[in-house]
Length: 339
Image 1 (cartoon, one colour):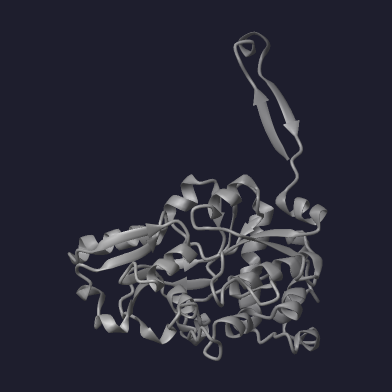
Image 2: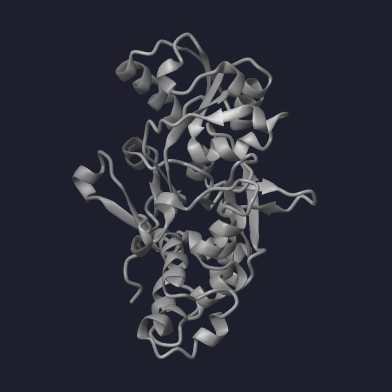
């Protein structure tokens, strides 16, 4: 429920007239529509990209599938809206999408000035540089005089400017409005270097004409905490989106997988029983069914399963978990208690 007041000069004589208007929450709108509108990338291998049949798949796409599973018990009830870097937050602000799941860094300016809100980190990353092996460069400190491709209006552009100031390395910068254009410019030789989040550099290399001709430099010049975004002033939706991330992490920590989720409902562990809705009323608190986490794991898997399926060492992307290991395995991924 949202309230608003009409006040003016007349209010000096007759007082302020207040009216109350009912406004449907995002979760109510999603349930009525029967579908989640999910903002995604324009195509980043391993994160979100259409396959040869046009079906969107990837680590970020899995999050939208998990949210749809939690709400509808059907991971396919998600519509994917590919968005450029410059349009992604505007689309969320305007209501074109319900949640932004594509790689978007959590920063103070985005969290305070744009009417949107970060929920939880589902991927810890950092910005790096990729160059052609033929350039003979071993470090970003050797890039003086090089031309660097970077996305316009991104944290990557700001980080690159900071890097040049602090390192004293003078470079030429070319900016582009969206990732496909940036990658094409680099792959066709308009730039000597491309810079963005390290995981994306590795993923995008797969799309180049000669992937093996490119190498990632060792430097990481920023912190890039990534995760889903929502509009501000809708606490219920914010909470559900946030705890969907935590639910997938908790499932991995407790050993609940796609293969054993139904058997694990018989577990004597209070933590497992609360997670899977056998005990307690956690689902009700979020506006979904008691078995919402069981739905997520059954249809999509836990955090580790999603990571390994789309980004892990046995995929084309071939990423190590690194900082994205669970906290009890030497990483940073840590979910608050679900109770």
